[in-house]
Length: 57
Image (cartoon, rainbow, N blue to C red; front, side):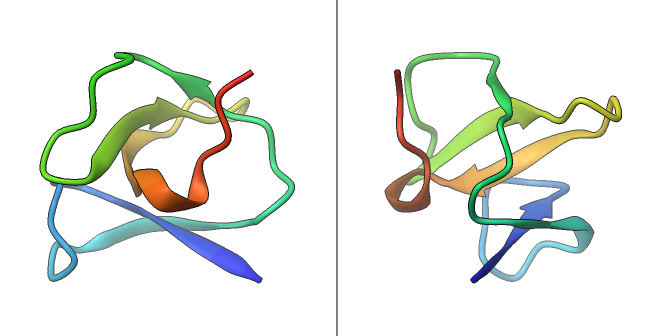
């Protein structure tokens, strides 16, 4: 399964990148915004992913 990293915390926002579901990302804020977490990838891409697909460790 793949996951979109979006520019803004909405499902209709432009996709900045697509990552696989097992990709490790940094969650920038532990509080979700409208069901999205702000994340950053190891490649330096910052955006929003749906919180239901993010497993916090």
